Length: 87
Ligand SMILES: [Zn+2]
Image 1 (cartoon, helix red, strand yellow):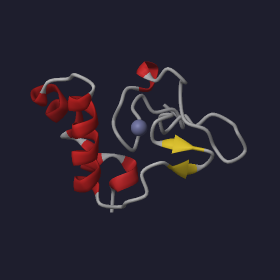
Image 2 (cartoon, rainbow, N blue to C red; image 1 turned 135 degrees about the vertical axis):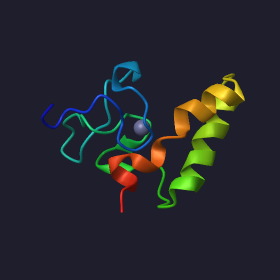
Image 3 (cartoon, rainbow, N blue to C red; image 1 turned 90 degrees about the vertical axis):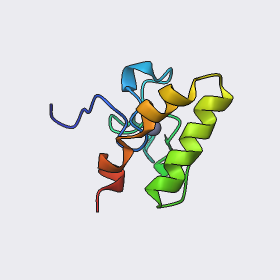
Image 4 (cartoon, rainbow, N blue to C red; image 1 turned 30 degrees about the horizontal axis):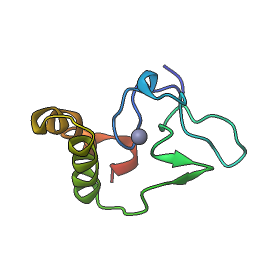
């Protein structure tokens, strides 16, 4: 697999679903680890470091954009296992 992960290591979104095909590093290269929603110019767009707060944040965003509560739960439930949140 190398450095390419299939899922954003911050929010868990499949990277192939990212319209920008990945976030951007500080040198403007593409990140193959984080999606464009989470990671811009080498920085996380969400600055907190509490995975559960971020989980809620993503869940609400998903529900706001018309997804069911069930789907948003499915999408966010594995988040604490992702690389960004590993302790
Ligand atoms: Zn993401």
